[in-house]
Amino acid sequence: MPGSSTDSPAATSPPLGTTSRELARLVLVHGPISRADLGRRLDLSPASLTRLSKPFLERGLFVESAAEHGLTGRPTRPLDARVDAARFAGLKITGDAVSGVVTDLRATPLASLERELPGHGVDAVVRVVADVVAELDAAAPGAPLAGLGASVGGNVDAGRVVTRAPFLEWRHVPLADLLESATGLPATVENDVTALTTAEHWFGPARDVSSFAVVTVGAGVGYGLVVNDRVVVTADTGLGLGGHLPLDDEGPRCSEGHPGCSSLMLTAPGLVAQVTRALGHAVTYDEVLRLAAARQPEVVAVTDSAGQALGRMLGLIANLALVDTIVLSGEGVGLWEVVGEVARAQLGAERDPEATPVTLHVDDSGFVAWARGAAATAIQSAVYTLRLPGA
Ligand SMILES: [Zn+2]
Image (tube, rainbow, N blue to C red; front, side):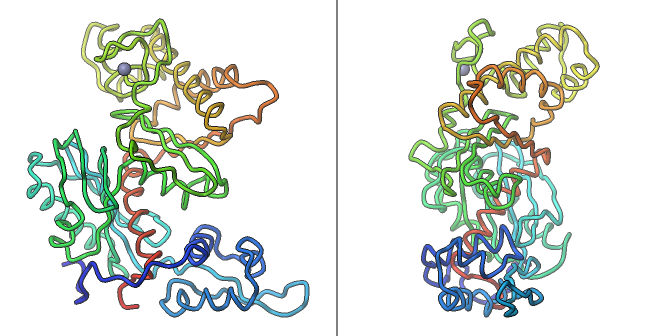
């Protein structure tokens, strides 16, 4: 059984101060990192840095790397994260399935699996999550599990309560409490796009960039934003407001009647519906991508329009959110391979020629990216409260 600790899962140390949190993030994201670099970035004296690092070193979260000789000739020891200090479970719960990963302290997946849901009943879903956590724990043995993160499409209050999850038909479900009772592990619950954005911020290809956007494609279109090293979260996060963005005046209408909106132009169900209509027989999303790669003309007509719509959306984001870095992710991200060229051309046309060119990162880990995002929220929660098993 995971979580053999006798401590109450909810027992935590007092939350760390802002500087300690930033220190933890910098060492996790950039370690091994020299003390001089940390002191500069955090505006800390060597003595203050030593004092703030102490609890992390004592809890085994940080380690000191081999000594380096700085300009003054005095040896100093860079700080690094001890990645195998703990493992974390991350679970994305959709309307159909639970997809999970177990990761190390840097959110590197060690094992992953997916289980279908028998229905949307809260108890049944919690049971499936607990089973998935136990299986993942056994699949990649190592340090004790230090926590689990679960993410859902919808609104989540304070990392604990799902206030609205339309795919699960849930309102006001105290999911973190239920998962803690079922697994014995500290649990964190988060909106799925926010969780994925958190993972990109700490552990993704844009981790060195302080402001960037995240766009996910798959069952829906998701949009996340990091500004000055903070993931933007508002009361409307979870409503999926990027889901019906108008992108093509001439495009087909979505179920809400919008012409050429993102929900039809860029989602897997939207592309499947358009190609099914064009070919006169049913196709899967993988077939859409395969036929587009093989340059099947009716399919290419649909995917080229999708590429233009995606380029338009990326351009709007860069121009209005004032970011020049965008990460593309989500379970439908395979679309990029067939539309990337068209999308890049359209993105270029949307930008002022004097504007900074937009750097695009494609996270092609597909569905795992969602579960890894959920794990990242558990890592953040454990690190911010210095809550590690055996510490
Ligand atoms: Zn729409």
